[in-house]
Image (cartoon, rainbow, N blue to C red; front, side, top):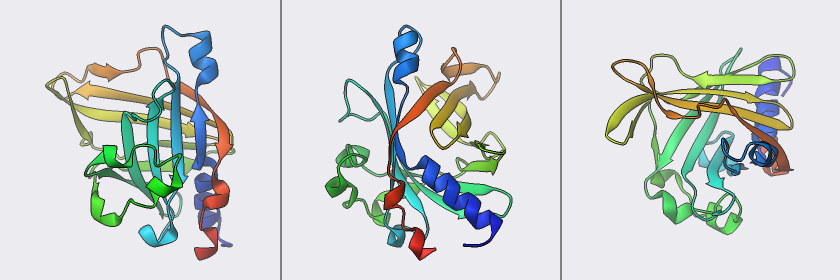
Length: 201
């Protein structure tokens, strides 16, 4: 683990591993922002033979009903970190897995499916990683009968996570869904970095 690129992957993984909350933002601007948690929980090394995560995004008032779940594999690409994103075949079976390790252990590679064209690319900029969806506008999401492509911008530091997801109309490229009040601003409430299998790298 002496190369700069491996160190960047390790640092990004350590910063991602945690329970993040936008409590301050939702308290200060309750009409614009709901109180949301993002959880990124490390998976065993054997899952991908690499660093991987299970993630949930949930409203604070209903922690057992995540509105977004995913599995993620980190890949070292030299000057950038490539994160493959996967969906779960039956996601509600695993609701709460970010908080309950007994549920997390039931997730296997057989129950996930790659979300092609939806990978994130992260680059380090000083004491921050900046990430966005891979180019091409091919990460497609249907909302309310309208096919949209995802634009996702993320900034991660050791203690903060800023994210802005927007769904854009395929035809006129106008925003269909997502925040119109700027990025969600999360602060890390707990770290799961000690669960990362860094000794296997």
